[in-house]
Image 1 (cartoon, rainbow, N blue to C red):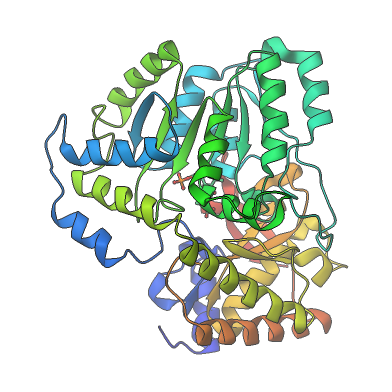
Image 2: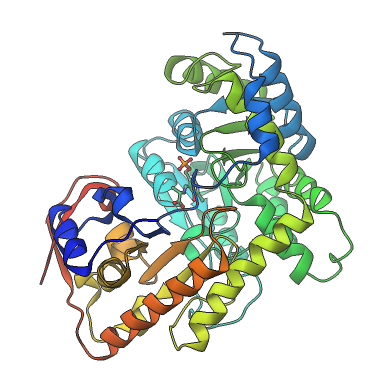
Length: 432
Ligand code: F0G
């Protein structure tokens, strides 16, 4: 943990052109930028790393990884990739293209960017709820909107996506029932349904806790049912794979798998390593057994809820119900008078850094432009990293920032340099 002064942090932020991705992480006290690849690996995972087999082709480490994946997601073809967006890039470069439409409950930023880069249109179909509403499955696909889209444009839709949990919409889960209904519709139109499965175990935990008739089921059986309702998946193992790097694309269709395999070899590597080393497969194989343990999931979701509940108690507005991997502060409610063109979420995120060295991530107009539904600030919680006292400190900083917001002491931002795609990663800003 690094101690910096407020004055130092102001200088650092200015030197980073007010883009938090540009801060050196050793100048961040608590890092809530992402839960992706930032967790701690277990001793069992590190033991696995020591026995990684680094053969170019046919490594037994790949075989162990493959069987850990198919134990939960029983798809025919498992194509390893270095992370989630590599799987997206391969799939959409085969299935996407001009005039195509890809529906999703809500696309994550990289998913949307890959769909759009292929020339296709990315359509978000999750219902939008006020952030304070307590629907148990706010991540769900809006089935009526999906049906209407299919009735009008089914020939232009090469696949349907379902993101679990729904990261861009506040980390909210999708119910098994909603996945079943989506699957029935997809099958009626003979269109493959894919899971963007990054946080599949947290989603399964919420199904077990919140969905009628699910409380006695094993997490693994819920995950298997989620998988069986779909025809494939993209996965960033940096989340519920419990590793620092890794991912995969899985599918059943032989012709599609053949086309994707060609791209895999071209861009990632041979079919049994795909941009990873043998030791990474061992870590993922163990991670996939650890992430479905109920004791782990209970700890994960309860510790996130502790953070969120403390913020609610201090009057900081957040997305409710509290999700699994992150707390999402509602910047629009915190800065009701700041126009979205001035990036209220980013104003809060910068203040969290200046006031207490916390790093968070805007998920709103800065990230999504016109497509943004809410102005959120995500505080993602790395897996197996922070203790209750770290969280207590983070709550104090959030409370201080909320007071500054109330006193009208936070300024908005203007973008001074804007890259063409995924602008939030590398844009430059200046306070207004
Ligand atoms: N899909 C979802 C829902 C994601 O949250 C992410 C990554 C990806 C796909 C892409 O995976 O990073 O391995 O290429 N989300 C991270 C985040 C970066 O901070 O939420 P990747």
